[in-house]
Amino acid sequence: MRPRFLLLRETIRTAIKSRVIRHRYNRRLGNLGNAVGAFALGESAEDGALVDRLVASFKSRAEQPTGQWADIYSERHADIGQAIAANDRAGIERILRDPVTSDIFFGFDSTVRSLRASGLRIEDRHAPRLVLDGLVTFAEAIGARPLEYPENYGLRRHPIAVEKVLEQIDRALGVAFKVPNPYRGEYGLATSRGVMSFRVPQAIYQAWRIARLLDGVEHPRVLEIGGGLGRTAYYARAFGVRDYAIVDIPVSSLAQGYFLGRTLGPEAVALYGEQRRADAIKLLSPAEFVHSGERYDLIVNVDSLTEIGRQAADEYWRQIRARADRFLSINHEANEFTVTELIAPARASRTPYWLRRGYLEEFVDLRQ
Image (cartoon, rainbow, N blue to C red; front, side, top):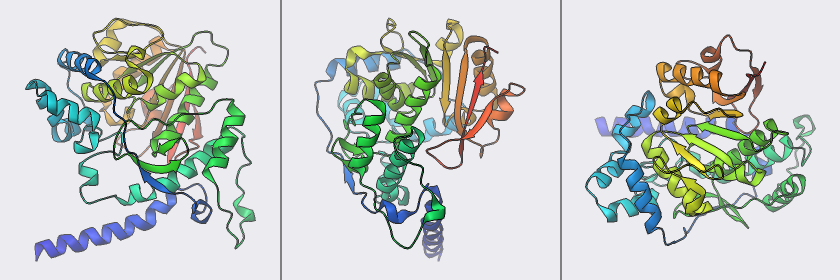
């Protein structure tokens, strides 16, 4: 009886999720009907030297994640740590080159073994339309197309073509964004530039926002706390932001180092323990960041500061307040504490985040 009950419960939860996920969109679904999904084929590369550097850097770190990430690390990320400890070269290369065979991306990207165990999830099946929705919203945010006006909705649908939206963005920004697909099995919206997964328009917007906040600052220095796969750092380069650092836990740094090394070139990333260069994306440990004392024109955090535990978050805020001219947070408020509570009594602007409903942007000018 119990397996039947579990199956029924899962069926009910799936039905509820199928309806609730519609609330993630910024516009009606009928206008997104042209979105076509696709799996990336992946790209091969001579990456042996990059893998050697990543393994050496990972072995030199001993810190443990905190908050929600402590559980993710112990339950989902153990295989890569074990492969490195055992000097299992084949296992290390498989996980880095083909992440869908492991859970190395669990918590910050969707090309994950456990999330694909039963095929594409509801979130994944919606990914092509969510990505198109995100691209259109980004185009609206930068003024590349008029803001959609729902009070004028009628019975007729107006399908949106992804290539036209990309052209509008290109014209507005003066740059055509690339969509690298180094990994097999990455799923998202099929475009002429590659398969665009859910995190891509988010990263492009975040990189654009960073550049806007630093407009007029010569050779700006940026630090991101919790960088996901490194996509925001990748796209920040298109906006001229090159002195960029990411502070993160060892497994995330491992994934970032491989992604950035593959997409920007091995020389474009400086791993933990390696010599830093101003024009390289620098991957730091939390301790290295805290003890370095370096200043930044902007520190940014997206979707993670309220997941690492209050004690760790308080320490980050102390460092931010002492060492940054500006701070940008893009987070939701459904965890045990919020960024607003964390940074009080600092006066921050609060505005809805364009690209993801339920998230908000909080910006603090720490020079004032």
